[in-house]
Image (cartoon, rainbow, N blue to C red; front, side, top):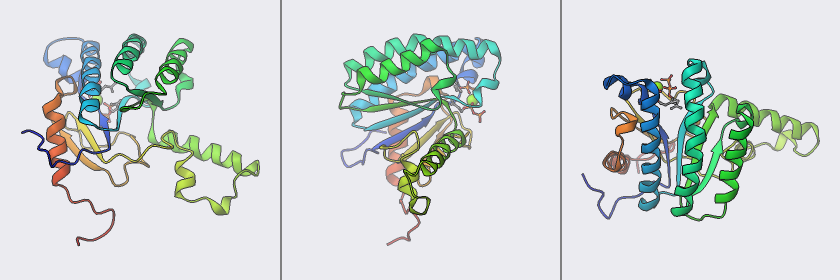
Length: 240
Ligand code: IPE
Ligand code: IPE
Ligand code: MG
């Protein structure tokens, strides 16, 4: 199924890239091989999304809950993260991509934090796709951190509590200045949000595919965009 010319390309696509472990298990490989292959798919997806004209692509790389996995798996994910940050810098520069990380980076090792900061600062003037990676990210944790900073600003007299509206609150989230996602794609069939972008997904269209993340490709992305185009978006209104 091809994207026809009339299709609306969503401005912001959010992705829950799930199924690396299952992909590896199916092949009798260790889970970490699934994560490695998943990183290759992330790179390809960034290039495809940039070429399609998607403005924001936000992927869930590591949740606040993923620390509960075995020390071996967490360690392997951190190593992969280190390795792919370097590759990502090249890919971002070649594709005019701006990279941004959301989540609480303070929990990572010093060198990873420096890598993240470097990736953001060296790509900040790129004008194509904004590629957002959620690492040590949890929707509840993001809301908690936003509430904490907002409360501090109220105490300091910078913000009047009576004047706090949704826009004020959103400006304290990690996604300040970004539009909310139009389309959420979750791979591997699970029908849950897993603590992803809880505030931002309020009116996002959701597409779940059985495809395991390492198998995700241009055709899968196009299929999701076709489904998105068939939806009638309401935002609480009624059919006209
Ligand atoms: C997603 O794949 C990647 C991360 C959460 C880091 P999983 O590792 O969750 O793979 P499954 O769900 O076990 O197949
Ligand atoms: C969601 O996948 C988190 C990421 C993709 C980083 P999980 O595999 O961790 O989610 P659950 O445990 O199935 O809800
Ligand atoms: Mg999973």
